[in-house]
Length: 89
Image 1 (tube, one colour):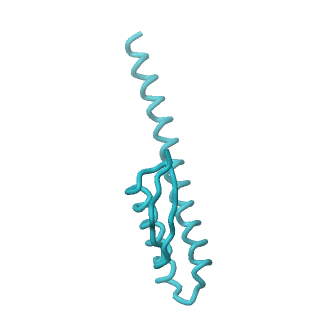
Image 2 (cartoon, rainbow, N blue to C red):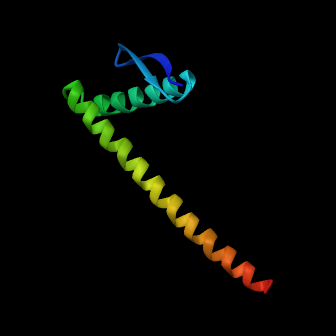
Image 3 (cartoon, helix red, strand yellow):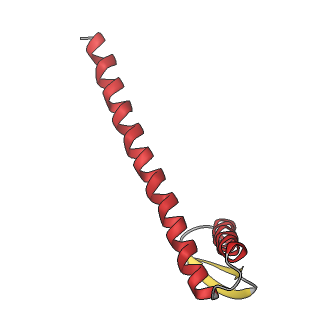
């Protein structure tokens, strides 16, 4: 079931729908808003659209890094599990 939420990004109100809870959607919107404002604070003359694109690239970079770390942890866990299971054979 899709949930509806009213969010604000850069003072602009949006109504969005998604599979997440309203609280989660608002938290995500708040995070995106903060990331865009971070870019605008560093480069006040940048257009809001360009700030949003840079913020999206920053968020994608964070996501990619976390995904890579998760994959590495899963591999280490698999290696340790195999080593431990070898002790019981």
